[in-house]
Length: 419
Image (cartoon, rainbow, N blue to C red; front, side, top):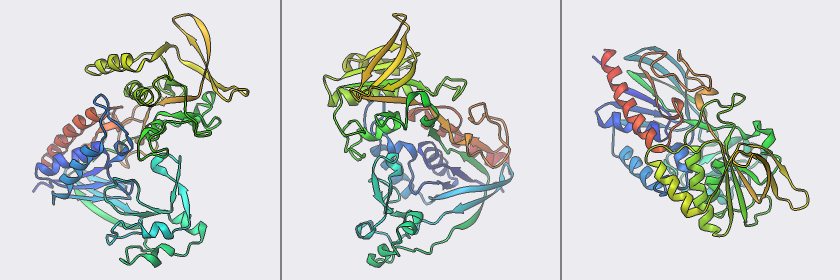
């Protein structure tokens, strides 16, 4: 008899889509997600392009589908440690890391008030502080608090949060657990990481506070972000009069990511709309090699360029310096149209860093093939394990959903072939 159960590793938009499609087709599905919430990086997006609408409405529909489907089982703060077996009959070992907060949590927040320890907020890329016990973000699913145990130990808080919890939801002694799953197919959808801008020393990231990355820009523009949606200079919180976007920061580069991440141009165009809305008179410059906007996205490019009043400078920025007199940032680049080396000053510089697949640093624990950037090569490696989303290719949200739907079908076919 066929094992029609499917393991989906990764609870971002690709993983959720694959899981829902498979479950609604009649398969038992298990979702394993390393974060304490589902939704992945889409939860950190302020607006989708090209419609420029927030993602939470779409995510909530998917979460409701999960709530209503008894075939879907999900585990947060979990990771796959080992895979053995073959198509149709995989044995998978999953580690469940302690959350220190159980299902009794009502989200009342009394524990937060009692907690003396603070940590850098990972959801906002460390741009603000939160308590060691916290809700991961405002729309977290599951809507349950989580504890950073290391911060608690360092602060010596001695379980103050547990003392005030009337629901006995806090378990300071919670331990890691291991469980074993037997499934017919596996969908690997662990997504991507922003390329590490610290490796781009010539751009001064980490050295100059007002050099930020595109993912930080996204959180800064969000109403639930570290500045309540206001785009300001991180160095002092001042409003901006000028901003530069540096495209292909570490991408299309033989010393970093060789691939084009395909979404960075469109994300920067979207960011320009954020700036123009808040600062109608601000100077907006984009340093680019090529603007890549395929299909319907070309209309988005034309519309944003005209509406936002963007100045496009064809030329890859070579270096960023700080002006000691004005405190501004100086972008040095060769303008290919004028054949001149330009030096222009800005209040804020945004680096469009690309997508690095999670498999570049955390490969699938079985026989699989990868390209030079760490993306999974489709069709190579262990049969019955289907890669989808941004571990296979850099994709925008809409493309990731389409790819994950196809992955669900392939996984279902694997459960049948393996009988």
